[in-house]
Amino acid sequence: MAVKIRLARRGRKKMAMYDIVVAEARSPRDGRFIEKIGTYNPNTDPSTVVLKSERAVHWLMVGAEPTDTARSILSHEGIMLRKHLQVGVNKGAITQEQADEKFDTWKQDKEGRITGAADVKQQQIQQDREARLEAERKVNEARAEAIAKKNKVEEPVAEAAPAEEGAAEETPAATEESTPTDTAAAE
Image (tube, rainbow, N blue to C red; front, side, top):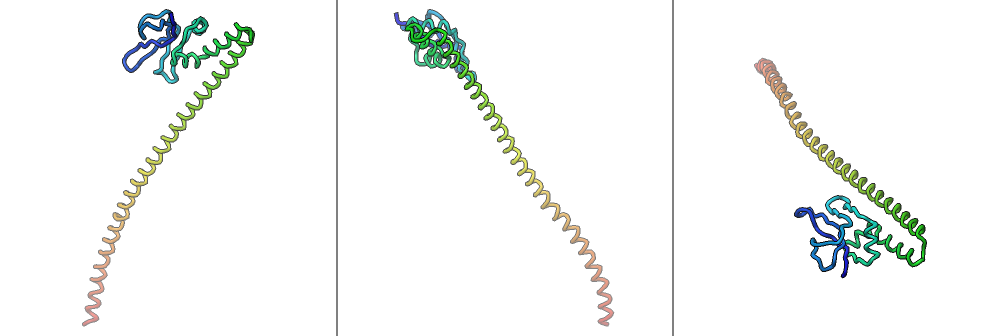
């Protein structure tokens, strides 16, 4: 009987979640399984994996073959490294303490990378937000300049018109005053 570690789909349409199960290779995808060892939710950012690591290592040690996707998830969680180290302990290449120390070092390094990636992602989100705000400021300034220019164009026309009216009033008065003088001089 070939045993596989694979994903069994559940959840609603377009919002799938998966159970990580140990099942016989001939059983249907969502059918009968031997043991459920975890869950995988790709809908969150980052993807959420809840796994019984001891049971996963046990099934790998007794010969269960993970599918490609399950292998990727197990590798990401460190289960494949743990199995590799355990095989070395069983063969006598390293001691259990050395294996545990190597796994703990790997785990701390992995947590540091995840934290670093989360920080980079937060910084990118902040930079994108600042860029959007700066673009909005530029648009608002351009809009304010256009409104000010429009209002400024109307004001000089409005100011020039009263000045012309005043000049026009003075000119006929001056003409009337000069006309009698010119008329008297002409006589």
